Amino acid sequence: NTQTNTIINLLPPDLSKDEGLAKDVANGLSQYPKKLSSKFFYDARGSQLFQQIMELPEYYLTELEHEILERQRKEILFAFGTQSPFQLIDLGAGDALKTKLLIKELVQSETDFTFVPLDISKDQLQELLQELSQTYPDLKVTGLAAEYFQGLKWLNEHSTDRKLVLFLGSNIGNFVPSSAQQFLCQVRESLSPQDRFLLGVDLKKEPEKIRQAYDDAAGVTSAFNLNLLHRINQELQADFDLDKFQHFAEYDPIEGTMRSFIISKEDQEVQVQALNKTFHFDAWEAIHTENSYKYTLKQLKEMALHCGLRIEDVFTDASHGFADVLLKP
Ligand code: AVJ
Image (cartoon, rainbow, N blue to C red):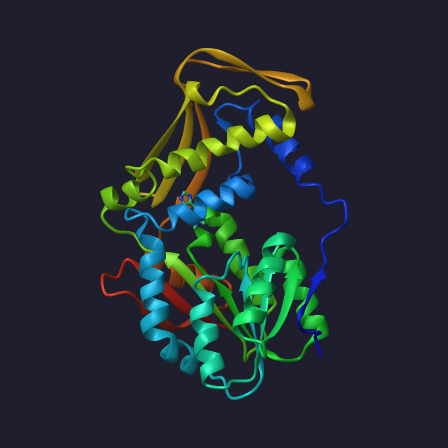
């Protein structure tokens, strides 16, 4: 069976993130409308800023999902059924803040399981393993440095344990609906009949509440968004003047799309040395940097059904603003 208390690295050694960023910048800033991918938010500084976002009063998502996992963790684990040894697989684990609520419950009830945090950041995994070994010396942990489906495939080849796959925090919201659909179907492909998938989704709600979660009064989300330009300055030797750009966030209640932008406050040119390119920005031209999709349970049910996944249970907070949905192949 799978080795524990170690990190298994499935990422190619030269998976240079810079190359990914360079490509994204070269393509995204030559198009109209301009765009950059939200997956590049998370350098060291960006990850720190995201931690701060999760503590903001406006960013309700974390609090609501925390409430769900805090109050209903027993029910969630009971619905899955923890009698036989299983793997608790956390896709994009990060600091596993919410997963730790489940881990705590499982450890207290002396359940036999292996925690498998999966992330593309080896540093994050290292830190998480370190911390968990101190809190729970007997916990079995296998860190997987991998892309989502590469990791799931590897686990299927190396273990016969049942699986509870987690994709929490409304991370699915960053996918446009067609990609979210594809993602669900790919997860479905990796599941055996006894396995389950717990998906965290932010639900449609009062539009102004959603908008403010992405445009907080303290300006942390603005700093998080603009950090993308800072990162491009650092890693691709660009000369973005952050004072000449501003954060803008709008919610489209029909599509359920929270969109974030970086707006050029004036007509300007920016040089990116590593690309040997200059990009022109018109006054008030926008760069689209992120989508955070919001769903209804009905929409989610249909997307799941399309891939042969059924909703076994829905766990929501008291305000029905967020849901952790237990899906069954
Ligand atoms: C980490 C993708 C769930 O979209 O709500 C927070 C990222 N962006 N504030 C989200 C984010 C701006 C977040 N996810």
